[in-house]
Image (tube, rainbow, N blue to C red):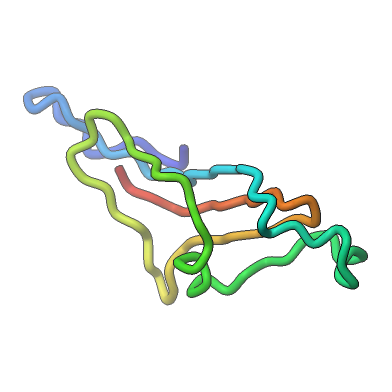
Length: 93
């Protein structure tokens, strides 16, 4: 969590600025048995996030969520040899 702001006692609301990170195993993305096995991890371009399966996550009781886009979308996806996927995105919830 980066910040908690916009606190409204009347509406019982607040805004959380955070980095949302998920990690999962997708055997389809495993490359440990290929010629790339010496590569520690592969960091994908932010546009390729939409081409990789991601879990359907949600934030219970949230009214709104926004993804940060300073100059480009603020998200990262990294793939490891055994098919482990790390996904990170900055959100305001």
